Image (cartoon, rainbow, N blue to C red; front, side, top):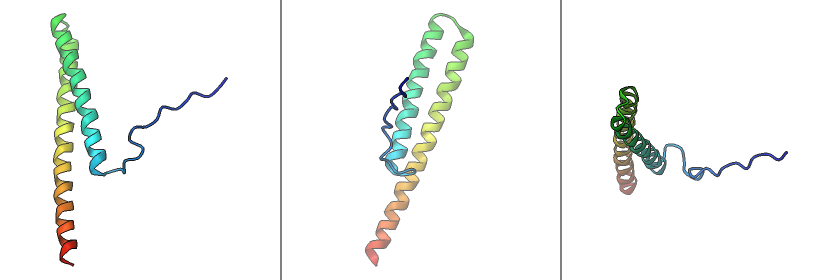
Length: 90
């Protein structure tokens, strides 16, 4: 029996905490939100209130995380701008 072939990690070349990694995380989170939005529409269509409730709670959580990550991304960019300006003055 052979070992399973590992799937390549599309983020393996991104530094943890880098702006690129944060953007990738935001992209993944928004993709999850899109899935939960689609599920919510499906559950509403079939009148499954329990599924609708769960899908909407997941959608809200995804959006909150994405907004939080975006705020952190903006803070990091501002910090990098200040750091770069300080370096230019040296």
